Length: 260
Image (cartoon, rainbow, N blue to C red):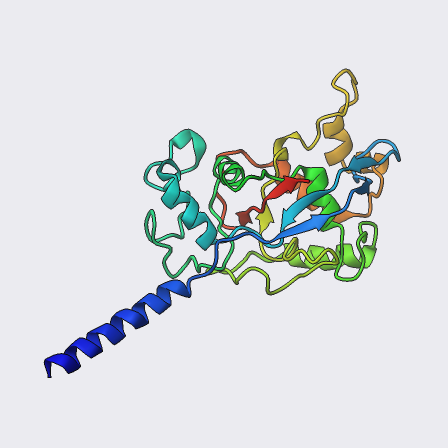
């Protein structure tokens, strides 16, 4: 009887350990993005931006991946983070500092995370946040074309995606929109932080006296943009311009890039 009890206990422990081993992997899959030219919709001229090749994470960073980060870096835990670096609802869907809970599935994108925390995580994995031009370069790909930036049908599809707030708990990453670069969920899951989100309207030359604010957001001013019909791009740039680095939103996550 004692031996049988021992065997049962051993089986339970082994079963428990197998559950732990089956937790989602936190390793990032990097997708190689080739160099190329990108025509930003907010440009005054037809001169493109030269994009150097880089690597981008195939999906947004998940709760499981970010959990590993905060376990290793306690100052970024919910109860430890300084108010200057995040709003009080930081990681608000997590059960506690190091427990995800039912509203934060391991393979779902981490949200309610500030720019400061996203930036710190990116550096921790040897990368960084994407510049807006890099992000848009990858995001311009549809499921079949690497550059669908001026495709009105693609823009319409994106606008329909943007109309819906995500339901909590969020779906897993890597199950919906896969573009021609083999990068998942650039659209349709959650918004993403970029490294220079708060410089949307900054001119390429600070000596210029043109008002980029007016050119971007005044309805009449849209006539000066490369493609004034690309309303999905207006939505994205309007969203980025409204953010502050400490914001923690239910529909805002991030992914990482790294240089080649």
